[in-house]
Length: 550
Image (cartoon, rainbow, N blue to C red; front, side):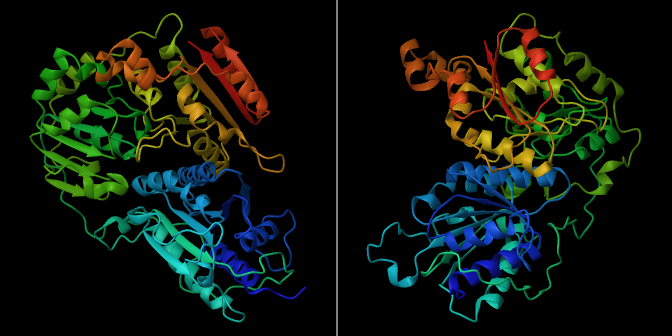
């Protein structure tokens, strides 16, 4: 067979991306994206052809699930200390639009994704061609950079593909020199026109030209200038939001202040952590403590509770650091907003600044209540939290479960907070199953995921893993309480019962066991603390579901 221009460009692009550290590719089937599919099938094979790079290929039928799988892989790799962009390949038309929820989450949470979308060549646009729409600019402000790549001609593929890969990977990694959203990692859209023929052409793989980007993952960048130390105050509080990291614990302990750490902060550990801070802030004693705070230091992005937001809003002095991809959206009344936690915060400039009684008051007020008795949602959440040990990582749905964990999780030993991930960029329930599967695949770890029944049903298609695909070691714990009960704790609960049920809690009556059987996913129903404990203690060998009926 003779080499096709589209096939040659696809091979050149895959080789150039792999040269720049892109190893994982999530592909959904389609004809227009055929050149990329053929190239990835070769590069992702057990024995790639001569000259082809070795890549990890993941195939998913549904593009929405594919987008969240890629997002989860990227998050898993980053958590494992090897941050890299992950590529998604789709055909044209509605396939591209189905990526939008994952792209929005990646934009707001700073996850590097490469969206490689196939399109018609110029002569087929705007003339009513099948599966053709306006794909250029379809993701709007949610991408760091985008390119509309015209159909290739013979002889120009290698240089074009290399330059394109260079710019795309660099843009996905983020540009810390800029003062806008491009400073953070995020999605990049590469819309590629492919002209027929689109089939396999048996072409050869060539080494891509080398540009200046080093091989490997995204570099860890540090601030160019050392900001001033934290002002010494007697009564400070450190709030650790999503993605804060263990540095939040270190800051709190260095200054003798209480630490209020969300479950996904990765900082819920150590002697200064107040596990039940939500219940405390809701109490009269908590209100008194909050009124006496001199300074609030926010690290990461807290989003879970109104009491914490109220504490931030009325802080007499507020300093924000490492707010994530949305650092420009930090509270307007902050005296300082820093992209990173400076090393100077890890020691006190005034060793006697802290009031020992201040921390003691928070500890006494936030003494963790006894473990929940009986059987119910709180018991399931507590058991899930206890299961995150011995190298097991966690993913939690961004609705009721993460808020339950915020109230129930104990403080781990210093520096040993469990690794717990949630899609808190936009806090949607979209794609939670696929995100969890991606975290397991990207990290190579065993993952336990906790979610409600509505979140589970919202993306049941994420259970579909083809027989030739790598199966994640993922245990999904579904709390089946018959609908979206989170709304019963919000202001909507004041509505008439029949209205609340129909348009908010939405009971479904679905048979989750039968659903899992249809996807050939092992399913186990538990109805007691003892049954749940036994199910969580069993080895995880693949993808499975535990349904806790409460």
